[in-house]
Image 1 (cartoon, helix red, strand yellow):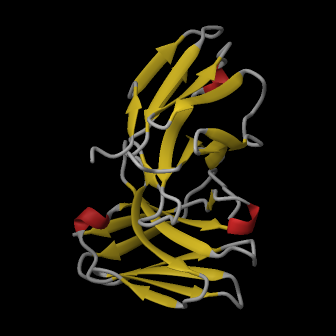
Image 2: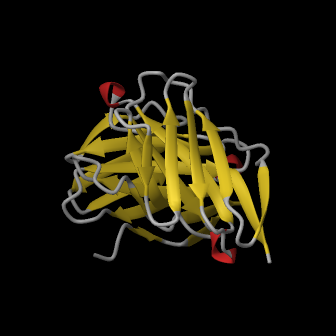
Amino acid sequence: DAGVIQSPRHEVTEMGQEVTLRCKPISGHDYLFWYRQTMMRGLELLIYFNNNVPIDDSGMPEDRFSAKMPNASFSTLKIQPSEPRDSAVYFCASSSQDNRHGYTFGSGTRLTVV
Amino acid sequence: GESVGLHLPTLSVQEGDNSIINCAYSNSASDYFIWYKQESGKGPQFIIDIRSNMDKRQGQRVTVLLNKTVKHLSLQIAATQPGDSAVYFCAERNKAAGNKLTFGGGTRVLVKP
């Protein structure tokens, strides 16, 4: 398995633009998580899905952020409109029901909003 | 398990020595714990996990110790190598509250040759 795949690896955008981050979880994993990492706040959970259904979105900063999981092999995190304070590394992770081998993270998307 | 990203504590270790990284977690109901290693420009990488019904688990060159009485978790790395230089995070989960991980602030390990 190629692991959790995220795209793009890097994204630079102007304030006010829409940004879409993509994630392909490991095949067969039931859970998908979106995390954000910054120097100030460390790793924060934004939202997670179980069997494509959002379970907990209490970490989503505000209405500018939205996430979808239309099927078991794909999820998106969208920011519209983007702001400079959204600059961070965004990680996607997936896990099986029994958490065997923990939660596997992707390589992340480094987002810079100028 | 509150994330604090402002300042990372650093552990400097001589190559070949053993390393001990500590983590205090906040939720006495947490039932599962993981240690992750994160190298620059990469995502967190699973090292070892432990469930709350255990107090010790060993892997290859790594040992995790869990003390539920004082809510403390530690990671021991034997014979530390230059490739062990990274930031190490502990993470906890309370299954009853949902299948989500809460991360600690991390510790930077620097291995001196």
